[in-house]
Length: 113
Length: 111
Image (cartoon, rainbow over all chains, first blue to last red; front, side, top):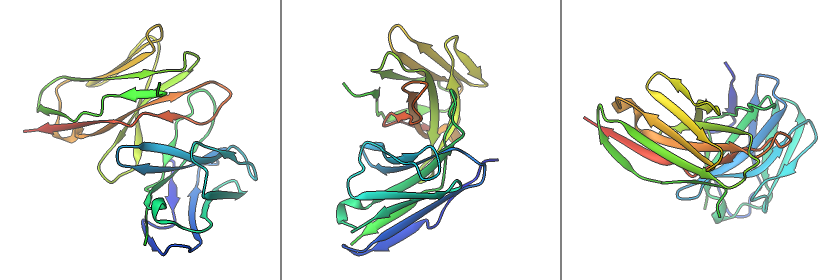
């Protein structure tokens, strides 16, 4: 079974802090994704990566950056956390190809005070 | 027009009912289609892929109508455990890697 893990289930940070969210997958997947999910807005893509050291902006990249130094690890960085970044953050990975099923991690619920 | 649109519901049905969810997508070049299920406070998980000819998995039937850009999910003999949010998902094209998720339709099955 594919396993996608995220470093924290719950996180509380203060406004202005730098926040790192880590995601690791164990299936040698090419593609990795970061989403945020908010009530009424659904899943929104922040960034994705289709290879090591490669990244692409999603629909809402502002205020975020990412890092993919190793194939299995994809980090989301909030350079200076703000209250409107309070959300559920979900990481996903996929092998790629036509079917491109995405496997999600359990999510990190981030609260910025 | 939003890329993937779903009726948010909620759909409240008794056990044993048949319920259908619909979804429309805006990009006629879309290549792949899926239904994901998300339980409360959990991550989304693939329920089933949707093929042009339609496909069935037990009590679940998915259909695709490319001409109308319309996808459906039918659940027969609803169980309490079917209560969840169902996400319609579209892959825009073969070259891209990012899927587009609908906002989901919430189903509540009661005894």
